[in-house]
Length: 432
Image (tube, rainbow, N blue to C red; front, top):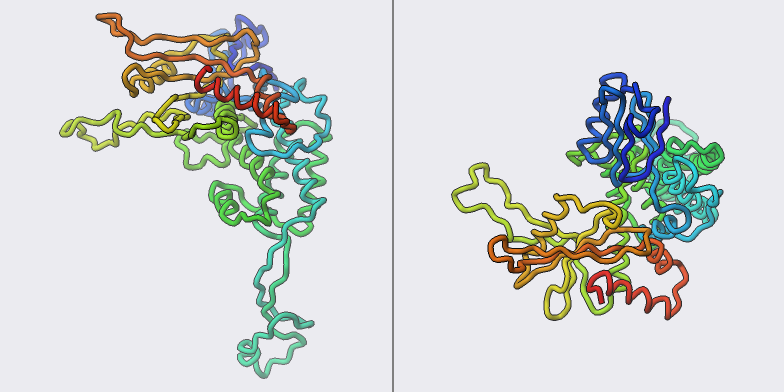
């Protein structure tokens, strides 16, 4: 087994990493997994004549492909990453085991989530697990509840030292506890940290005394959300982590055409960044309405009589549409790619141009991107008429300093701190 550690949006090739020289994926199953990961945009592993070429994207974590293990770390590490994760997904500010060690290990990211899940589960066990009344119909030597006289009559003449009863015991073996138990068992297989794995197993064993595991799938998560109420509100952070673990292993993506069951853990930082910005704008952008993933209906349409396959017209969908009382003030998209350090890919640019051209008279579309460089400033690209040179639209590349954002969403919020967060949210949208 060869392990190669990379960061997000990086490339390792035989020319830059001598250990990759002469390596191959080995068998058909490994090559098929590499092809599936590449098609889904998670990780590109290509066999070259001289060895392997590995190209990472916005996914972080670790995955095993044949005899090669790729560990991908986020450039954002330690406490700022944990703070932003907690804020984006509504996780509680609980003490984590060995937090000072996080960020130096190849599996730091999944271990961070597993630590948080263990802390959430321990907190729930300390409070007392949720219990629900369940209807039971059974014969009991010590009757309780209501005697089922119908069964008594049907069983006349049969001598037995028990009576059929209908009762409602208050049990801990509920769906929300079953999902929590299965999530802990899943986390055990995701971490290579022996102490953390032992801690997770101990917590799972405590639950397993009264709770049975359940098969995790998309339908299971939908059902547990449907059953959620104020009595299970404390479970929401733990359930959010279980969902992240499922999605990052491909378990919960059964209906996705790009679903890949991952022998490891790959977390989509692009989705995380969008979730983070969404919550920040909804919480702190005062005086405006933020609409997530707004569909631009009617902008693109098949010409009547020229749609032989009867396909639906494409609908561009920016991540955020911001309105005030007078109308649309901003159209925003998010991409987890440091555009201060790297070029803007053509497909992202063309997508933003479409958003900008949907507005009149001279539209503007903004892409928000993460950076750790305090010197990063906004860039603007004019979309011009190629014949007359007049400006038709504008694309704005606006940096989001992740260290600054982490300080603004910390658990303690004074009045001055809140005003600063509101000013930063306004600047992200309007640059004012």
